[in-house]
Image (cartoon, rainbow over all chains, first blue to last red; front, side, top):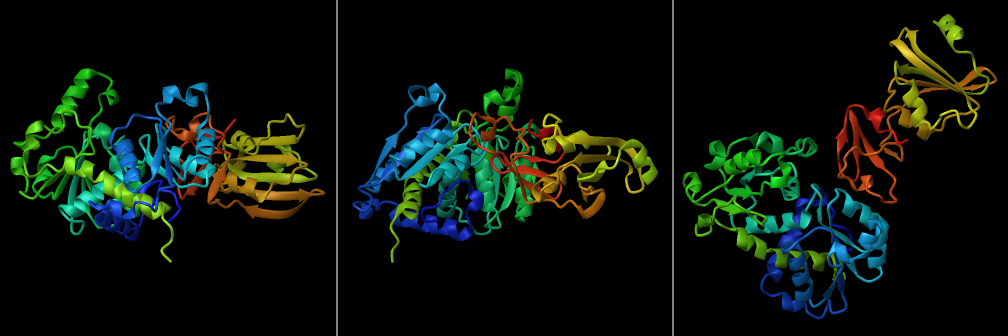
Length: 305
Length: 153
């Protein structure tokens, strides 16, 4: 993994994932042990789409490791508005920084960027494609709560465009997880992802309703259904309403059910769920820092030998 | 059969004969090879010619040009049954079937409007070749039908 790129979760073996999660456990709460090693390290943040958690947690992680970040800022204040290509932009930023964190609205953007630069490229979301670092923090959260062995997960919401969903599903195929995908028919997993999951021998079932599977789930991973995916407001309201959970919904669930969400949420998890033992999404968001510290350490650190 | 060929498409002296192309694909074969006649090549095309093996087939003869292995491999995407005959002084000196390559570069364009290759980037398209289609290595979109429609202009 050292000095490599993190483009998709498909590239990560179970061993790679466990290495990151183990390192994250070590650094969780005690990142200052490394301060000094990274005092000359600069991380470039290139976010072509809005981000709160991902960007801030990368920034926090790098600073907690003792390094610093340089941020391209909003697209409308950069050369992108002058028509500069991504290939040119990353070649320029490569000269300033030791690694590049890239979020971009187009699928394959991080892969393209990685072909033009020698520094590590970390994909922080490429359109409807992948979001591997979100997956690592999701897996860390699952390992801390339900555990990754003998796991049954339900993944619900916008499975078609949800990059966090695609990345998580790929990664879980390393762990023999039983995966239930719950969505309206129009937002089912892309056939490409289903094809890949079958190739990996993943155990997956698709449903249009949560009810038949809720009771057997260890983890329920909820994602936001975006208004702009629907041609009209009525259709959106109808569908979105069916894929919301409340504290009452969870009466039928196991007491140990872990409810996760990559955030931001809108209406899909009612506020009354926050007070239940199931709610894990804020802890999940906090885990972004130790997991990204671990990833940066493994990518950018000196060899131990 | 051979009488039919002679009637429709004359023999070439030096060049390549692409035979057993699926009926209707001859123009796509030429498109993949980048042959549009503007370079002065002598090209003969037979369409919907009776065939023992394919019922009807297309056939393409290009005078003065021997196809490279790369070009032949790409043809496999739209003409998997094709046979390639290299002709020198009116004799067939090499005859082989097309084989599917592992990847094709710069030939097809990705149909996914959200793919980074659809933006204004200096990137050469690249597709992995699957058993029954092609897959963009950037956005991972799989295309199984109408591959010929992806041929870059």
